[in-house]
Image (cartoon, rainbow, N blue to C red; front, top):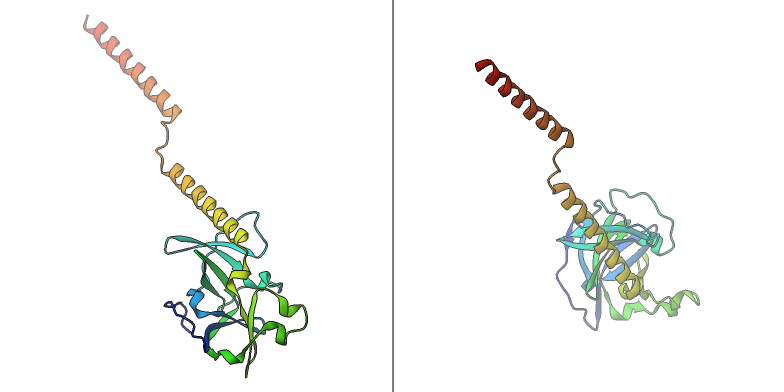
Length: 212
C-alpha cells in the first residue's frame, strides 16, 4: 500500500465485508473500508494539554483540525517509538474525523460475511462482550479483530477532543495576529528625536544672534 492512500466511499454488501487491515504489535486489526478517509505517513502532531493519555494531539487535514489517537495506548498496549511503517489512518465517525496511529497498514481485504464471527462466539467470556469489537475473522495469517469505530471513542470524548482542538487553533491564530501587529514606537527613539529637535532649535537661535 502506498504511503498516502485515499479511499472512495464504498457500501458494504450483505454477503461481503471489505476492510482495511493494520497491525499493532503482533495482532492484526481491521476497520470497515467505508469509514476510512485516507491513510497518511506520520506527520507533526500538535499536542493538546490535559487530554487522555491515548490522545497524541491534532493534525491539519485539508484545513480541518483532526484529533489523533494512539491506538496502541487506547487499546491498553504499551507505546513504542514511531517507525518508518507508522501511519495515521484518518477515519470518519459520524460528522467528525479522527486519526488513528497504527504500527503498520497491511492491505485491503474482502471477507465473505459468513466468515465473520461475532466476537462473543470466539473470544473468552467477557472479552467477546467488548463493545468496540465488531467481529472476528479467522485467516491464514491469524485472527483479525474487526473494530467498531463508533465505540472507539464515545460521542462525549470525540466532542471534547474537537473543542480542545478548536481552542488550540484559536490560540495559535491569536498568537499569529499578535506577531503581525505593528510594534509601538520605541520610547528611546522618541527621546532621541526630541533631543535632536532641541539641538536644531539651539543652532538656529545661535545663527540668528550671530547675524545680529
